[in-house]
Image (cartoon, rainbow, N blue to C red):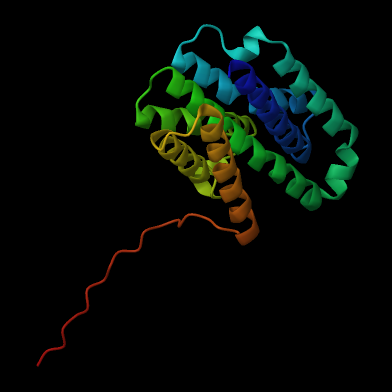
Length: 216
């Protein structure tokens, strides 16, 4: 199970690293800036998750593969920088696909690690969301943007729903692999659906206005 989680974790890191590198290219950062965004987006959420769970050093500090994958993703994106700049909309849709896949994977991995550490239901949900959204939040702050999960997109909500269904699968007696597949599929699936339908959470709650009675 640990090997399976590690493979998923590395896969999610790759997906997020690509998304972070493309964000750096779109913001016209230099080679170092693009590489840093790739590393931060790919690993920051997992680092915070592992620190909170308290299982020794974060996985990305113990295994150089995480850093190598992030740097490789940055290099590949940088070689296509001109194409990304010229066709940013199309390239961004491709990166959004990577981002949605990473969302589902990191939601499941974060929740599974929290579950194995005997967190409660709320803690498991929070670890799934932190793992999947933490890197993107830090990335957006580094490029002086309000984090996307706070102002647009059905993103963190998709992660939360995916983890909730993982808890339901656990209650129904699914094995660990089944629970992870449920969380990954639902979180990524909801994100893809939101992208296709341009679904967003409402920006404000409109108060209910009482009807004024007409004087008799």
